[in-house]
Image 1 (cartoon, rainbow, N blue to C red):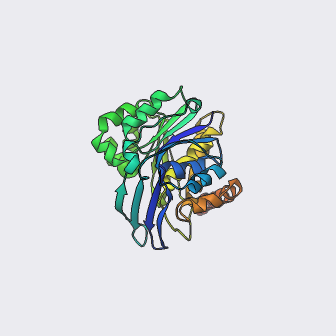
Image 2 (spheres, rainbow, N blue to C red):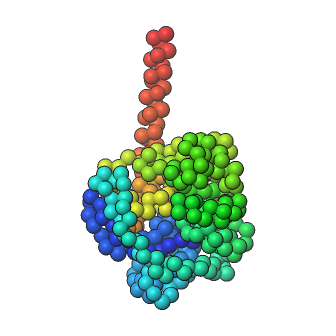
Image 3 (cartoon, rainbow, N blue to C red):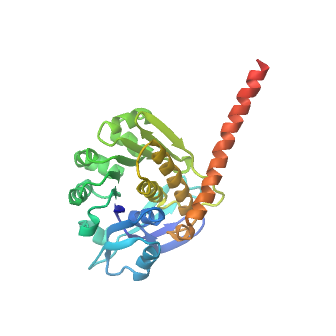
Length: 315
């Protein structure tokens, strides 16, 4: 029955060292679905204002995304603006205008309540819980959150964590939630809260998967030209969940494949503003970049092996 994502569809205004754009298509559900729909039927539940351009929805439709769950209501669409430092080391939020998103009450279309996989993007924990109560027993549920909910709505967030399979966080959020500054210990504490799988996103340093007592560190794809990192984390989650939705069994091997797929998908996102670069990415392009990632990691293994062999021969 496919993959359901509940999150935001928005307009972003972004300034980076590459250029500046105003009111381009953004939002967590947008970036997520552009990646996930390459692998599985994807349904988006979100809210937009009466000012939202129909052509933007057509971009999602052309990708095969089901947009029937995107509700158009009177008012203005959610808007966000940000500026990145020259080397993408920091980001300043210039404005956040929630507009119609401030009253968002997710309504899952009846025909989509049977979705097998669910991704709850970064929205209020109470709304995430409400979505789960509308679903008919999905086989896998993942959730994203942020520091604002971790500190301001901790009890509600802990309630939701008991009902999910996987949690996506960055390292600072993992430290805040676990109240621990060591990533391995933080992962153990967070998994004890409910999610058996933890994915820690680390930007240009890749990501780490914690599952069943094991940890898998995945490097990012090395790129010469980065245009805009906005949406990379949501794109990573979309590739991750889309890949899992295509697998008959969610086991260690499937999770490893999901980590690779999310990493590769995110590498396309940062090469353009909005979803421009993602629109040009297809399965063939992802496969080529996957080979690029494999080559870089395999060369590291080979170098280590040669070093060991040389050390043995000297002995």
